[in-house]
Amino acid sequence: QVQLQESGPGLVKPSETLSLTCTVSGGSISSYYWSWIRQPPGKGLEWIGYIYYSGSTNYNPSLKSRVTISVDTSKNQFSLKLSSVTAADTAVYYCARHRDDIVGALGGMDVWGQGTTVTVSS
Amino acid sequence: SYVLTQPPSVSVAPGQTARITCGGNNIGSKSVHWYQQKPGQAPVLVVYDDSDRPSGIPERFSGSNSGNTATLTISRVEAGDEADYYCQVWDSSSDLLVFGGGTKLTVL
Image (cartoon, rainbow over all chains, first blue to last red; front, side, top):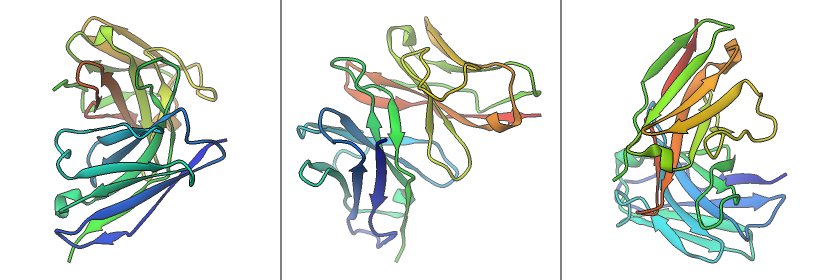
């Protein structure tokens, strides 16, 4: 079955750019929507943004000015870049796949990565 | 922006029924998804499109959605159901995804 694996540095300095990659295995990245979600320590889930395999994106307005999500279909990967990070960006970052059961709509997220912890500190 | 409101906590005795609500303006017109998250683990989809269950999710988990409230119902609650539960919708008018604040289910 489809599995997702997040990868990237676990420690990022303030003001630098956080970069993570999600690798899709056991299936194709095509024909699905994919999201990044984060969870600060002890807090709830926060949606960061989504990308369609074709490359179209949308982002949480609270992060939009700092976020870029991209896709590489040849590698079956999609990536997250978050610029100008501060301690408030310290969180577990998850990637997830959206179900494709509703035409023209973003379905529920049925496959999640295990999550990767990113700490912002000097 | 669209807001989803969940109670911070719900407690229930084993074998009883737990109901976790998710409030939002005219949420009945949207598709609601529910996730279960246990400590140190990634969220798991337990109900999608208001009331459907992914394969492998027990029938004890069910959902409903009408008016301004969606509800996740867990029947015959077990100790293993103790977790945080999050509701989520996609707001088509803004093309944004929204999570509720989460509800901690405690099994007494």
